[in-house]
Length: 559
Image (cartoon, rainbow, N blue to C red; front, side, top):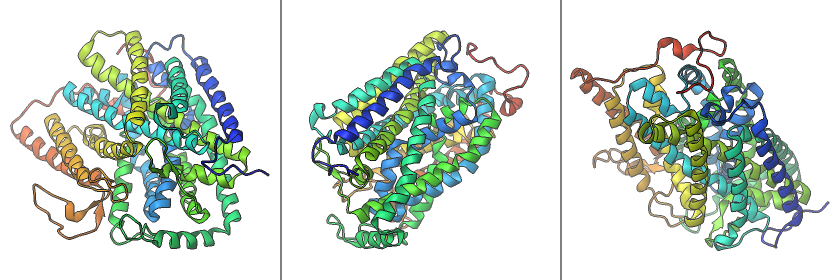
């Protein structure tokens, strides 16, 4: 049995060949997908952007799972556990409470979108409030929040390429990544949402195989879980060179418990506000498909919990992150790939690397499609070409999906990848500010559209202001250094209600509270002044429509 070469010792040919073969396999699947369950034409957003709105339970389960549990998740969560300890496990309760929270709203969003032909959450907001301005804000927020999310898929893919020895500097060092994303861009352009839906079967199968083998094989090799936890506790108790304080802890501390709770809850509230998350829901065939998926998707949370434990396994194995040749900094995202590369046989390490790499392609494709749908429906059609035909919309979305992908590549080429991670933290705070206009509006139209706009603006400004003052001593960044705000730095118009408190909190959760307070106050004022609140195009029955209802809007109808 041959173990993989030590990272940094040159190209690892066995792993690289297996990676390339599996990558080519899914690329062929991506191109073939255009003929999979295809309609007469893909020249309509219902077909290209939503797969014909007819995915059943199994396809939806793999698609949504492949969409939500990304390559970055598979490298970043254990990397966070590796670096900080217990705080990294916030992802576990977050993905457990997520599905009960979104179970009923997702059903209502599917029904009203199917009834009215909505393709994006901004379409729904436009119809619900008759406000193109509010819809534009929701669309821009979705696109801005999604771009760095796509860039982070590249970070995960590059971590794998770097571990296999492809770790050059400059533009040439990014060439393998560019080739991979060019192939992704081409088959997404041709096949639309059908491509990631088909590839998701392979991606998730590989991920399940690799993680289940890892959580049984690696602990047995390293002395068992008891030894792993003991060794991790000792490693995390060591002082950080940058701060002089312990690097982390395998249990939560008094200062980060509130951060853990608010980050988990805030992330759960935010996830299905991301346009790519809703894309998987809207592509489903009917409400029963969504119900079954919301019950079955927590299986991925079990996988995520097992995956997070690999951070402790990497600590015990003495893994050292690979230095990024382009920036000169240690790349913490290489922790899991390095662990696999040094502990698995070469052939299985190649499969593991392919699983993570392919895991970047599925969500990146869905995210680019979702962002393209937002651009096409809520900016291009609303403001640039109101009489656009379905064929023109589909063409515009295809082009936009290419622009979004290569915009994400630009993040990696011209910005330190660490900064794109900071941008993603901002993205989570931003997308959370769309909750009142998107999620609450599924149940009530009490909020005034001017109140929603004011609340959105207040939440955005306060959220970014809080993120701005957070430093990161490890990377020597003075601003946008993380998502943990000490309460002593919480400012309300210059007033610091928690002076001296080192307890941390998630800024997105605080900003959402501010958003809701402003929205309520402005709504009360507008209602008292009897300001017109727009026209609601939806009807009560729209929110309960199902796949076999009479007079249901035909798929592919002109919007």
